[in-house]
Image (cartoon, rainbow, N blue to C red; front, side, top):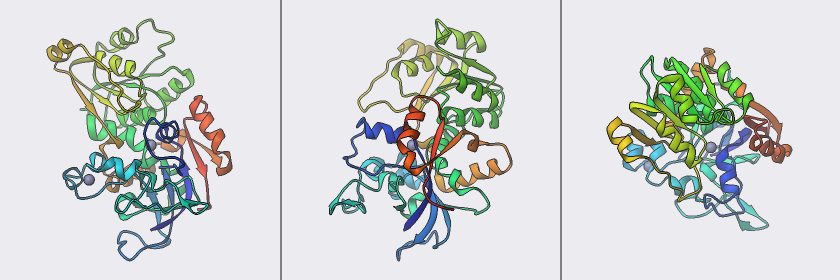
Length: 340
Ligand SMILES: [Zn+2]
Ligand SMILES: [Zn+2]
């Protein structure tokens, strides 16, 4: 289908591809948090009609065991469908520059554009009474943080959790931790302003590693060790700290992606003797078709104010939007691309 893009969020994954930590061939049209209005549909499209409002999310093949089990974020063909820069079916791209095809269909969309080509698998129809321009980040960053807590870690009420990084993923995770009834929520970040935001969204404690000699000791002193931890920064040293703050039978979820090939280490006996678990999480292990409407429902009820993370930019200001997110001034930039 052809989708006229109204808004598109800027996500860390766009930047690691720009920097070629992930090998999508360049030049490419990036952008993978689009929201827009369906303009045209092909003969085999069944989920939407022209005029429908949609959120664009990640793509998957729909046929592998993970997809069939309802876990499309762990699609066996995830890389080709989201980072390949082309239609996995025939290697073609819907985008060309001066007659030569360039990488498109990034995350099944390439939504830093006025129009995106997407499929039934990666568009989610949404109601028209919610602000469409705000919804794009639900397709990746917000879904990643909220789903990492709700779907993957799935804490029991009364649990403790430490969330490393207070960007859009980490703060969405803080909101989700409060929603699931965690009573001790520790946010760890180097930017004091972000820690203040974390407190507004439900963090009960904050730690700035610049102020603490020993981050692990500081978190353990506050909590006695946490039941859950979520690592959103993609920094291997932080992943190690996030392992060390766990209490007995605690679980760490890792969502922050470093360069391909990056390794982190842990004390094997600490893992064994404490019964700790470490789990990797893509896209919050969400099935966007169900999870994004659920998040919108929580937003409507005032329980998931993800729109407060957003700062809007005109499409022409894309470079400034990226700079502001890289230097920490903006938590979630969203580009205004077309009229709703
Ligand atoms: Zn699959
Ligand atoms: Zn993303």
